Length: 333
Image (cartoon, one colour):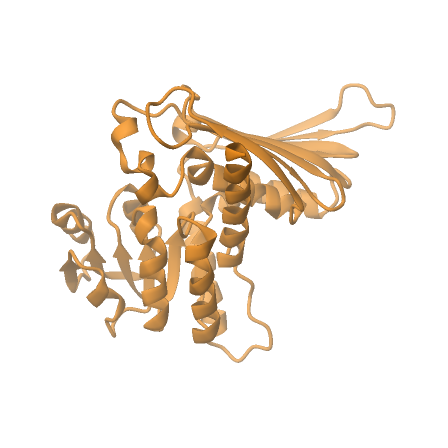
């Protein structure tokens, strides 16, 4: 299929590297040089534009990848859906739930595949943890704990992520939505949302740390912390069941070696039986997520009674946004 990428920064470049055999035929970015640099990597380019609007209407484009700043995500996705395109939109998919709700309605009306960019679901350690969880390897879920953080960089407080008009929020909306999404993926919907955000280090009008305490109707708890004052990049997620624990550490690169540890409770209790899987090498989550997205599109085009469900769709993005909004509201109370 032919792909258009709108937003040619770091994430847009990662998305291009993940499209595999498919053809990048059009790009758009407000920075013309950035758009040209990405276009030079594809032999199939037909259009390089600053304005995204003609791109989503092109007849030779079947897939639109939206990798812009948060303030443009919902508008571009909505326009691409109206043009009948399948869309992969980066998280958080909108600045708030109010922006995203009409996009979901449009996607249903047009019967196109729209996926939110929750690539963490496709990290190998997290995927294996989910398979083991589904197989009952740790027994019924009790609670989970997760942390995700980075240390920022010089000038971070002047970047677009520090501007509430562009970003819509701070660290709880940025990396925090990944934690919320993963927590929902394992635990299900949360009926009670508590939390606190604060700006502890960076001189900016959005939060640099966010804390969440989420509870399901069955009483299972998720304790989450997202930070951009972590100093040493960190990802850690621990899933506690009644007969064992799954622990994911690292995401590769600056976050350290990705690995999954399985702690199996013994009948006599005491030190658990421990198995560790390590996943060195390149981050394959982007490629695996795009392959899943394409598979959903291809199945949609066949005569099937049931479509393959999208793993991380706009309803998941909407649920995560609503949780972030509740945490923001509680912090202001």
